[in-house]
Image (cartoon, rainbow, N blue to C red):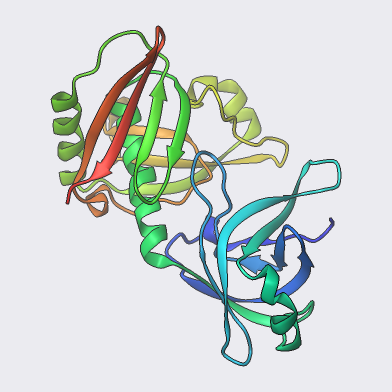
Amino acid sequence: MSDMTLPLFRQDAYRRECSATVLAITPDGLVLDQTVFYPLGGGQAGDAGVLVLANGQEVAVTDTRKAKDAEGVATQAIWHVLALPETLPEYLSEGLQVGAVVTARIDWARRHKLMRFHTATHLLCHLVPQLVNGCSITPDYARLDFNMSEALDKETLNAGLARLVAAAVPVQVGAISDSELDANPSLVKSMSVQPPRGSGSVRTVRIDTGPGPDDAGLIDFQPCGGTHVGNTAEIGAVLVTKIEKKGAMLRRVVLGFAA
């Protein structure tokens, strides 16, 4: 598949909808020329929402995935997984076809939870300075698996999270070059997911209280392609709900939002 989807969410995670042209309709999903829908990746769940047709009808998008070619290699297109295989002919007759212009609209409440959880996991990486060997970010919980043997204390972590959220620290999206990342391999904190290289630029997320000597205010800085809130205060009341020992060198920390 040669079609390319422009990922608008990378520039603005708060954008909730966009106008887009249908490039392809495949059994795996519908491809648009641009989208606000984030595809499953980096441990973060894919977005859900709707595509609004020119006549006002809404087609449900239940998941979003990175498209793959016939050999299973990821492409630069994004699949919007539709929840209507049995009614697809009806929607095709109503204008869902290649070349049609639709409005792509995410489920914002769901996305915002993912953004809050994702930023919270970066705070957790600061509180537990160990390599991550597994990650899952869903609308209901977030999980990080740390490569370590030492025990973790739930109360200590919750106090740290509350402090960092209350500090209202800015979250900034930026980029570094492939060569800068190669020169600073310790920026990669995940053992299971490596940032994409080859384009010359790697997207980064920085949580920092401001300029100071020797990065004194730096809380977290690492390559990340996910969606984030703009300030730690927006995370709200997040808690460590569970800590599990999953092996000799693995401690699992699960996050949830306070009721």
